Length: 503
Image 1: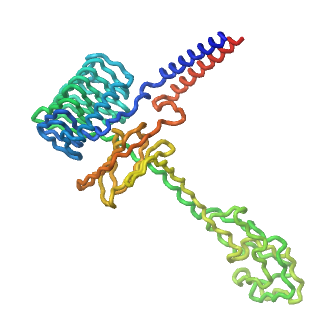
Image 2 (image 1 turned 120 degrees about the horizontal axis):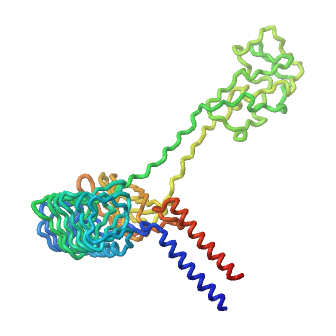
Image 3 (image 1 turned 90 degrees about the vertical axis):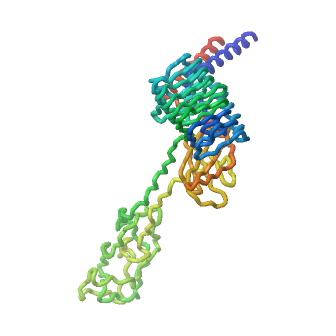
């Protein structure tokens, strides 16, 4: 009994070690889940106290107190109302979530990012961060900067994006005060909870300034904020293959012969006229070149439509062959009425010898069946919006304007803080190849070219994780091979160890 308990204890220890080891081996970036700003995602500028001077915002703005209302396009201003307070709550939740993520890079206090090239991941800095020169963010994935101290940029610095990096995937979470100096070009969303944010003149922000404290824009301006949208190309449908042209190989003359069981010509048949080709007594078969039927269509294999043996027995009074084909001199011997009936084996007629519908091959054009489009599994169906998942994990959003409206403009889909835009008409079907995983609301908005805005009720969805136990997309094939080999080695060691103990 003690030996068995020892086995169980050691086995449990090895299994725990194996699971911990496999977790360590997983790429750190695989643990990152797309940020969800909730209702704050539509705001370009959000603050408890807002002071703006010649500031333009493309998106919503909101505050408890404002000195000057910014110039707003593609949005509205919410002043100390339910919309503002809901966005402020969602902002607080997003800050807590961002700071809870496990860092993939641990920086130092007082770090200077100027001149750096940074890849996607979660960067943690225990103190202040400076950007004294241009910094480059490279890669189409999530960047989260956890900054425990202040964030300061030097005048004229730029945050550059390369290799698919997008402002919609970049989050600067600052615990201390943030200062963006004059002429800064800033990419990403700046999230601040308990300290003031100051923005210098002529600052261009491709992102958001979201603060639960004060935000001040220094004069005389101007500064611009644009809420970013993730760019995604719509899927390209494969071209439909054209049908096979009717230039296929003709059916050979020997394709289908009438078997020797055909009905013989009776002795009382009408004699062949002198102008037609008489059947000589020597029983010369009609050559296959008398009147072959051209084969302009796709040949049909013999099993598809064979010519039945009883299709058209040719009596002696059958269609005479016109004189222009192969006239026989008038001195040819005619078959008298009392002539011996021609046995069935005298005139085997090839399939192409008899013109007319009965002897013509069946012309069936090749049918090309287009690939059946994948049908999404609809998760949500409302009167105006349908959301579904395809077998490959892509998401399909089918939306239309209410009350049979007819218009053209810009559709905006907000998937829990991840934005997608597409130009369209009053009805649009959009396929998202990399839909965020998790449970969140989908916000749909349509802005027509004449300025009319349609907002739809939020649609809650739950997108599952990748099925099948696949490794993260960030793992390379060599990495996956190394991980699999390490796990197999550990499991093999456990099995051998247990066998040794039994012996």
